[in-house]
Image (cartoon, rainbow, N blue to C red; front, side, top):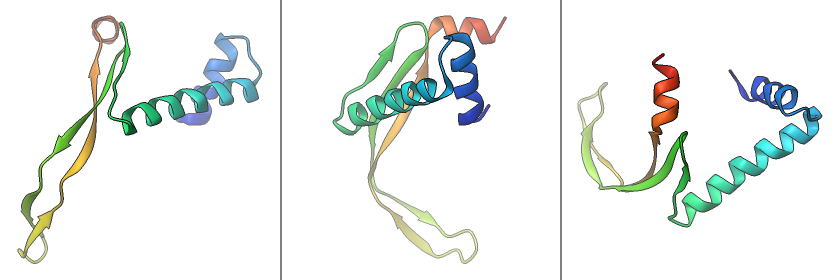
Length: 91
C-alpha cells in the first residue's frame, strides 16, 4: 500500500473526502516527525511506538574498494510493534 492508496482507504472507512483524509494523514505524519525531532516518542497503544535512539559513530568499509570509511553518529527512528497489531498480523 502506498500513500495514495492509504488516503483512499482512510477516506472510504472514515467517510471523509479524499482531501480531508490527505490532510489528516499529513497532520499525523507531521505530528510524529515533530515529536521525534524534539527527542520524544509517539506511543499508540495496541499499534506501536515510534522512538528515537542515538547511534554511535562507527568505522565501515566501502564494499567496492575495501577502503575504510567513517560512518558518522546519527539519530535513528525505531518502531516497536504493539501487542494488538502483532496478534492481528499473526492470525
